[in-house]
Structures are given as C-alpha cells and as structure tokens.
Image (cartoon, rainbow, N blue to C red; front, side):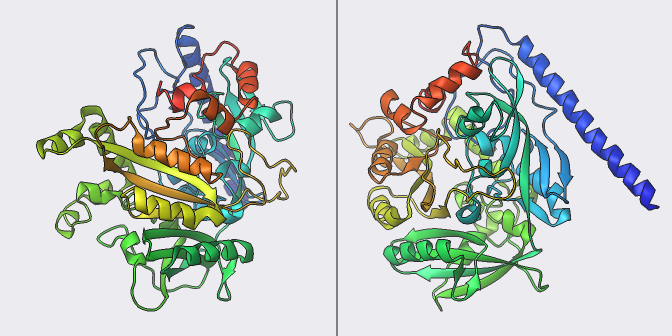
Length: 480
C-alpha cells in the first residue's frame, strides 16, 4: 500500500468517526425534544457504576447510543477526542496502539470518560496527574436547556468547565471531551512494599509523592492495600520497555492476593501495561469473593468472560432489586446488612488516624489506598486556577483516597445508614471529602457547604434555568 493510500484511508476513517459522532449528537437532541417538558431529563443507560438506589422514571430518557466511541486519537499532539459515553476499556484500546494512555485510567473497564469527569475518577497515577477532569482540554455539554455548548478553561463557559466535575449530570451531560494523553511503556515493574505500622505507611506515602521515587527507583504508579493494622502494602509501579516474563491475573491467579507476602519487605512482579491498567477489574478489586469466584473449585468453571467487574455489578443490581442478600440473612436469623460502599479522601497526614478509627469501628477489609494531588499546571491548556468548586480539594496538598466496598450488620435502634453517617462525620472531622457515587446522608446545609456552596446554584440557574435536570442534593442524598 502506498503512502498516499494510507493517508487517504486514515482521512476517510477520521471523517467517518466525526460523521458518526455528529449523527449521535443529533439522535441525542431528538430524544431530548421527545421528553415531556414536565419530566426530569435523564440518561436512557441500561448500565451504571453508581451504587445508590434511584427512583424509577417513567419518562423516556436521553438516547446516548451514538456517543460510545473514540472519535480521533492524535499521536502528534498526544490528545484524543472522545464521545462522552465511551468506556475506558474502549478508550484504552484505541490509545495503546500508539503507545499512549489517558493520564488517569479508573480501575473498572466500563466506567465512561464522561462519567469519570462528571462523577470523579481516580487511579494510581493520581499522585502525579490528579483526577480525570484535570486532563480535559474542552467539553461539549448538553445543558438542561437543551443546548450543546463548548466549555474550556478560558472561554465564556469557563465557569461550567470548572463546575462540571462532581456535578453528576445535574448541570448537563458531556457529548464530547478532548483530553490529554501521555506516553506509556509496554511493561510495568511492580514492587509490593509491606508495612507493619500505619504511621510508617503514611510517612512513606508522603515521601514517595514528593520524591516520585522509592529506594532509588522511579515511581510512576502508586496505590496500596490495607489488610489490617499490622499488614499493609504500597504497590509501586515503574514503566519500562525491557522485555521479560509477565504475570497473568485474568484467570486462576488473583491480583490482590499476589500482593501479600511474609518474607522480605519488598516483593516484585511484572505486568504488561494493558494488564496493569485492568489489574483490578477481573475481581472487582476483591469483591468477587462475595460471589464465590475466588474459590478455586468455582473459579475453574466460571466462564472467563464473566470474570470482570461489569458482570459482578449486574449481580449486585439484581440483589438491590430483589433484596436477595437480606432474604438470605433473614433465613439465618440475622438482621439486614447496611451497604458501606464508599470512596473518601483525607489529607495524607491524617491517613493513619482515619484507618485506625475505621478498622476499630467498621468491620470491613481489605481497604484500598490511592494517593492524589491536584495536578500542577501543564503545557497544554493549563490555567493558574486549579480549584474545582464542587469538590474543593486544596492545591499543593496531598490526599489519600480510601476505598471500602462491603456491608455491615445493622444494629437495632440505630438510624438508617448508621455506619455511613459515622464515616461522613469522621471524614469531615479530618478535613476530608467523600465521593457521591453511593449512599449519602448529609442534611441540605452541610451538603451545600461541602459541595459547591453558592457556586452551584449560580451554575444551575444559568445552565438549567427550567430545572429540567435534578439538582445534586436530590440525586446524591434523596436518591431521586
């Protein structure tokens, strides 16, 4: 094939991608116009990565079926134009052939780019790259008023650009995002560093985030797991192009179990970059144990295509719909269980304090740790204002995301959501923040103070003047 033919085919594919995207946007707008004016506007998605119950909606939803593709990857500028409902699984599949990846790739394959921006996402590059919305250069947003507008850090819609993260579709839905990409190497060398003391773990996190290295080796990826107060690990990743044997955790072997060791302080491992990015997805971190799939006798016969987070989520959705787990507990004579599925952030220097409290009060383990800092201004589309009003982390301060996903027995006489309420109080006491993808119990005043203050109502009035979209409190706390 000649160079001219290759160029022609590339140009044709590019135009086809944009044409398909434009058709998808038109389908979206047509579906918006079909929704009765007295009904709330919602997505017509069949799947979700939210873990809070939502009220049933009888009105038709927004048709986003044409907004699920990568429109263009530009390896020269290290950017990509991506439709809002594109999953990270498909986004990574489009960028890795160029040796590129999004700056932050959330752990689960079916999380969408638009969802990670409007609902926040995080992963092991967040200590150096911040959160997914910080690598967005511009966004096309369908507002509550039914208009598609483009928001950038410095155009007339800059307020919406900054207020969109953590708005959970209450200010609009992204139809296209232009994002930065970074170069990645084909392999990741891993070091699993064990700690016997949570304060020692905390000090190591703070040091590594600043130095970007540990024991003389660079650190490109950083997260960790706490099994109990005397057994915790940091997982340090280093990019490399050196060929060599790699591990496989997509079958019988389980990644989080491979971290644990009793020998020397550090255990080494190695993965392809693809398998590293999705290392948690096969077992939904460790939550697949709830379905018995970590039992070798079951796992051996469990279809490999169902060893992924999206399938486990479907099982959880069935449980929520029919109350299966509570029925089983009732037959055993046990009380119902309270779902405690949360990600919170606390300042790094309060990490050990929170973990000690949590391990004493909430019987859930393991616990995931993911350090993060708001991103330093970069060369592309950077601005000096790095604050995001609906999730106001402080610039130049290290936080640690703490993730825990399980349930605890309810206690007679305690209010609904007692464990979650206690966690909310502790997080606020430690000057932290809580993600809103799951159950929340704040009163309206405290919620407004934590998530946007006066800025949110101003944005809501400007971009959704007729209140076609639910407000954030209604969605996150009242479960509407």
